[in-house]
Image (cartoon, rainbow, N blue to C red; front, side, top):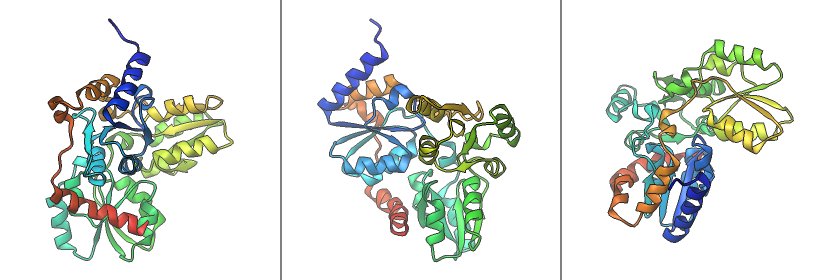
Length: 311
């Protein structure tokens, strides 16, 4: 017999209590998944939340590098990714060997890694940053010469905010955010002249220049919630406009572009979460478990610890 979304969500809630499960949902997940989560937000904040809860089992509804980060901060817990095909093109586009070769040529240049990188890549980086902390961290560093990876658009945003730093950028980034054009931003502003444009720094710098606010996903959501304005164009994954429509029903939210749709985030379904909850405690769940050696965790977490020190 068919089950309603509400029935599935109720069964997930019951299994969470029975099996000591904490569910983390990135903000780009669908509304029906977010409603089952114990915590929702940006990837790093979710991993920190996971490290603070007492639950033994953590289900991450997001992409692979996010679950890796959660495991790095909670090595004593069982961390699962709700759908194992959910990767991240930006996180996976650079190899450690490539960065090591650049470091060998310019050893004075410190490597700053966006949190959206694999654990393997983090092992060759000096400090990690989030989209909300990148400017603060880089400006706090004593080093003047920096290699910022992998997102050149976020790197350009940091570069503009830290003119005293010599920041080298590589061609990399989020293909979803980077796909948005200046013409689309202008067209959206013309269609909604009373709306404020809020964009993620992973967008092209020319798009960001047109924005009324540039910031992380959480920053965009907080800005919209606190603003006296009534209309907003949301320049990040389209799920955010949907969430804000629920959370601020007295305001209007428009998507900047239909192209800002992350197929990896959308690959996770509510039934993926349901099946994984049922599987936890059996061998079947091992297919979704994040397994990392202590050596990899200890090496990769160093740049996150440095972020905490500087931040």
